Image 1 (tube, rainbow, N blue to C red):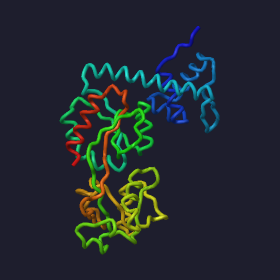
Image 2: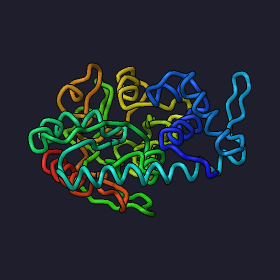
Image 3: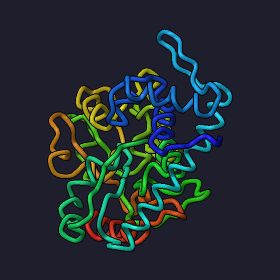
Image 4: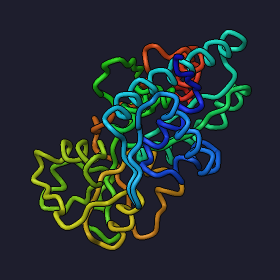
Length: 299
């Protein structure tokens, strides 16, 4: 008799593969750990093959488990697309949309656009996530996200992109720094300064290095920040200077204690912010509607 596969059990298996922990996998699936464990045991019995290696403080997949998880992901993605297609046919601008933003974009962009999105798309439920570029692209391709907002260009295999807005860089200086006497700066003005940067994996790090590459600015080898707010605090402490995207230097962020922000002389260095989504995503109407609102209200 052929084994009967249940989508729910495949979701449990994929959760264990991602979390490598039964408790965290159960929490992600909103079930108890005994329930998840029992269902996966039944799945193994039904298939007649061991999928998971269970050891104290260690959960891993067998070779067969790895191969089945890869196919389970495709089945889950296809199932989710069926549901989304049906919902989109009923009302293309309603339902859940999973939106991810870079950590250097989300906190500064969302206050400008959230109200406009709710007003323009009142039936759309946004689920918000924050990822760096590489994991965001991976999750977009895997169907775990619908839309990503990030800095372009990126590798678009299987994806589509739309430019949304261009964001100028600014310079954050300690409040008593001599360069604060100038209304605007050139990259060459930063020669000899210590440049504070985000840790590896943040595209803003590479962009800042590119802007300052020809100016003789030395990057700090002793410090790597995990967020723009950490960078801002280090600047306030006099540890060096840094580059901030324009949205991160406005309003309350622009008035941070101990920090002075100066624009670059025009034409200022900029980064291109764009929307990226999977080509086969059935929520295209909602994706394009959200992207349009962001482009209109980002600046």
